Amino acid sequence: MTFHAASREALAAVELTLLDVPEGTAGSLGAELFAVAGLLDREVGLRRTLADSSTDPSSREGLATSLLSGKVTDQTLTVVTAAVGARWSSPRQLVDGLESLATTALLVSAERAGDLDSVEDELFRLGRIVADQTELERVLTSRSAPVEGKLALVRDLIGGKVAPTTEALVENLVAQPRGRGLVPGLEALATEAAKRRERSVAHVISAGPLSAVQQEKLSASLQRIYNRPIALHLEVDPDLGGGLVIKVGDEVIDGSTRGRLDALRRRFA
Image 1 (cartoon, rainbow, N blue to C red):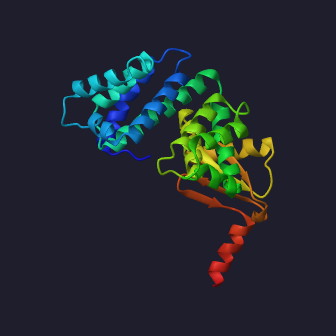
Image 2 (cartoon, rainbow, N blue to C red):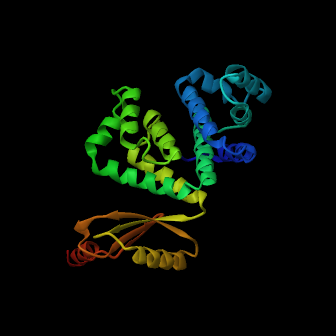
Image 3 (cartoon, rainbow, N blue to C red):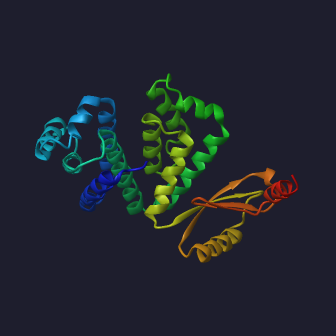
């Protein structure tokens, strides 16, 4: 999600409240923030009222407190009141901000549990699985299908097989897509997990599986090229014929057999 200038400032200020999250509570904080974001996404009038920068911030904070007291933890209430008291570029960006804060809280929870590497890898792999199974993607993104049915399918697929943070992030994406595609949404979440580890992400497509030694050499080479740690997200595509296709941000390095053949065809076209 892209934030405008005022919203970036608001998000940065509210994120400071996450520094005080007690050990062991970040996961529940994330889940409750997702729930609040979902409420404001559904209730247009409430969203506009809580994001109306022309009103007194204390009034907006008081309204949020009266609505949520006793229904969420004190920590969640602290974050939400800080958010509604800030100045956002639009009511919609307030919802975006709460969702971003929820994601950060869950990633903090995974980091403290030592699961952040697993979460990043699981999100990326799930994105590849969904991308390869169009029927699964169709069912999980169907607007006519009941949300509970889609969540039940998600739980059948990954429940107990992935880290709790991964499950919570995927369930929110399925339940509250808010215009996002499922595959791009999963990839964006994997990238957020990588950023949490202060690493860039290299999407690597190879004709066959890379060995551990090959992965280590590739990661070291990319780190030298980009002068920063690089996380590898690996995908196998036998149609490449050989070599690798590497994408880091907007830059694509195509060293595949297919890519070289395509380049030759363009030269002689």
